[in-house]
Length: 211
Image (cartoon, rainbow, N blue to C red):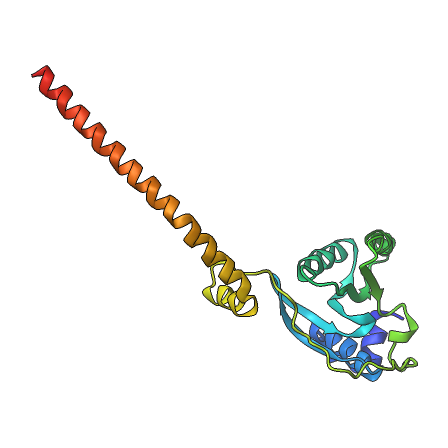
């Protein structure tokens, strides 16, 4: 189906945006019994859709998918997918530029060699077409945590506080290690001070002899 026909059948506004497609995909997933959440905070940005479809997936939507936008979306998803095992899915219309369509399809096949990545051309697959049959997913209504694990910020004291609260044994071991090393640090400091004092005395004696 042509993107223009798809947009008309789906009830998109005349000058539709990527967010309209994003909402359409989210609504279709909900019709199938899946849970979705839009604009989820993730590493380096915000994931368009996070859902429990396919056991957990992050979806990056693009209006039109050509070679460049597929690569761009995959790059974003790889960042959002750090520290989690969600499926990484690119979704959008195949580019209306006939000269670029072959390249877009080949690029999709290439990136899908990574089993974690999937590219969906929504106007080419019947299950995503407006009015298409909806396949109901069973067992999808259980509670789902839509928060994506993000890279730790070691400069944030709250991160260290959370670590200490979650793993008190680590705090005890760190304290024990520090207390064990402290006497050695004191000895080293004392020895360094003594050596410095002796060096000063030697220099004073040498100066006195020269006089």
